[in-house]
Length: 280
Ligand SMILES: O=C(O)CCC(=O)C(=O)O
Image: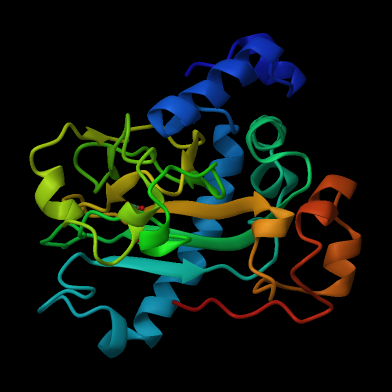
């Protein structure tokens, strides 16, 4: 979706924009707000991310990045958890007003942020990831109907995502609307089904925001460019459905410096703990 200049300037979505975005997620599984964050800001975050990623890959070379056979089954995809520090925790990332407007509408106002990481398709990958949802079944074989949305994943691409550099491939339009048992381990192979289904490459300029139902099938694809393709990935859930044991370590003074909304979003995490080093 294109956001109008007046919404971008005011930092507030019109009620009809929120309604369209929420309905797209409900019906299609995802929405993309194109090019929302200023270029300068995304470039700053991208630079800082590379300052973390490059030494991390060097330090974990044997374990993680082996150009001979790739890693993660030759996908060369890495998930890197981020330390809870600037610039990654800017309000425009963790509590962007366009995102919170959609969260409020779909998850209710008492929702929380319980996951902060990145997914990066590194150059040299040979294989796509298996097609997957980011969740399992909640009730297994006992539940033969579709449940309400319980997790929204928010991705911020830090570079332009193109055909070349390993875009996320998605299966929108219904894969998030299946009976709950279908997300369980006994369900028919998503990869086999997906080959015969309609897929879309999530191409988007840096600074866009993608919000998706975590059940929508997707996969990472190989990056044929010579630069990493990173996405920040955050997960929001209604507070009663979020993991009880918080996993994001937030120093007390950092927590106290956040906006009231960001504090509310993060209140179930590990407050008063030193920020953790990046980890995969
Ligand atoms: O960022 C991507 O391309 C998708 C990554 C993904 O789905 C995963 O690592 O589970």
